Length: 473
Image (cartoon, rainbow, N blue to C red; front, side, top):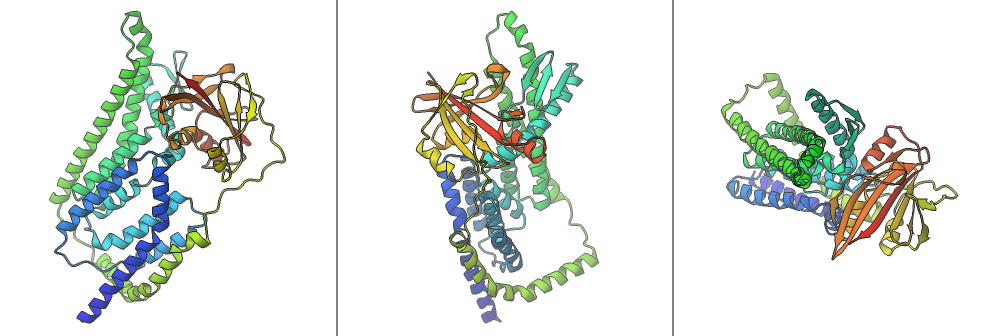
């Protein structure tokens, strides 16, 4: 009996070592994304917190006998990772690797810590850029709609136009920074951290995560409503010769909203912990107990069989980057592109593309070219279908080491709208404006709005993304 148990423990250790080898592509990709500055380094905070909690939990559990490895779940997660490797984006593959790692360690982790363990592991990934791309525009639509309803309830006649609010002839944009993506990540991080500290079970952890998402949306609706009212009253304040406090008000309302959301999340986690302790265990249905016991018997019967094939499967998964590299997006390029000779009312001429841009162009699913008018730089990208690689220009500047400061919506020549931000590095500062247009007269000021318009079939290509960088003192 003891010899059989010892063999089982050794098999678990061997398979666990093999599973650690599997995640090396994800580790390499994670380190590369960490040092290319293309995303916010928030994931490091979640990773450090996860490590600290693991050390704390391991000290509490060191006297307990480790449970056997859940081979069935690990096998299925690993099989899904291998089957979708060649078609899945790097971030999706990394999430599947987290599932593999989670199922590998779930038997070693207390039941009251498993859901928050997975949540912190997922938040450690570079998510901010992808969340801005996919969720930025839908969040802005929800926030703009909520602010429009709130303003009309307050008696201010407001009309909603996409993510624009029209109030007494004045148009106010709910721009990309107002989507609250960074605040959403931070709120979820606080929720997962509280769930881990308070030992919340899976159901309570899901509740606190959903609550934090709701609080972020509600908080940003309140913030947008407050700032719109302030912008409306600004002419009145100016008439009383009061100092211009727009930047301070925007910052103060944002900080207050963030603190309130975090405080409510922490309070809710303690309430859920108290409810979890006071609520007696529910009586189980005899039929469900029978089904669960039968499932455990089936898993135990095939456990060692799966264990024997897990190491070869891990070796296959570890060699995937060498034999089945991620496929790059490709587009059927038209015979010729009519490049612009005038952008935003300025005549432009083509110039040589920079080295880092040429490296990016090799994997870009379209064509790109650099122009100048003698003072400003113009970077034009053309694509023929939706693609994640048409990312915001702020990601490029951040990747080159610039610090980014979001700016207001700019109105160019011919009343064209441009998204803007300031990029600074080593005493150099640039005002960067960008927009996306097509030949049918459609235009977008951020890539998230463009992406969802393409996915929903509201626009036809090709699309041209124009970025203008003008050096400022």
